[in-house]
Length: 282
Image 1 (cartoon, rainbow, N blue to C red):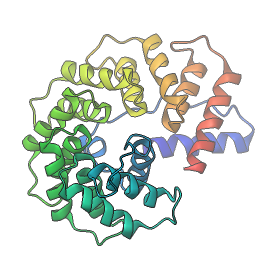
Image 2: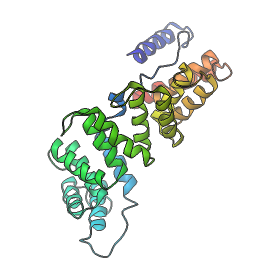
Image 3: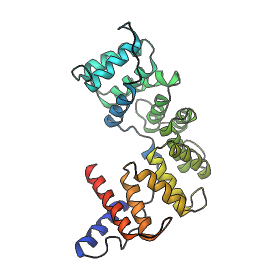
Image 4: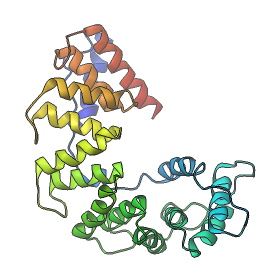
């Protein structure tokens, strides 16, 4: 809401011919586990498919789990076959029933998002847990999300934090960010802002844009670290260059106020306009 209000002020200023940045201030990050621990839904599922399709491998036996996984990914993307999510689910299931952890995770995602099959939170949790118990980091994070949101299982914040930690300790950036936010707002763990910053930094250093934005906010406001506008600007810019609109806005605000960077109103306008364009595209 704060972000929207500032944007409306900005828009009015442009219409009135005044400096479009006369009231600009950085957008704060509320660091909420409700936002950090959630499934991105269908979009996240599709992004994961494209990441995995080159990793499934080729095998001679078309009935093998890896071959079934690869075929499922092809049905999801329409790579060499007509796109067919129901067939993708069939192949994911064939591989999952043979114990393939990646396929189990994808089958859980299909049930969770209603892709190629009716939504079923209980089945989603069942297949995701099977994958997580084999040590697959993405699935461990998703199990944590299910416990946090009470999807297919009773809500349990401590259990959520436990599974998210498992993924984080394997280096899964989304899990590291999620665990950091849990520490920040004391969800399922004792609140510890310094520990929060530690895990958020790990995710940020892997290039996770949300974590980069959050780390910038921590430096800007002196949360868990000594206040440092130079560091804040650095991390806002990293997230902004990945297209995160609120980070782009903050880069513009930093340029306008000369915080962490030499004051440059033209550069400020460029980044704030880029932020507006990104929000329209979103």
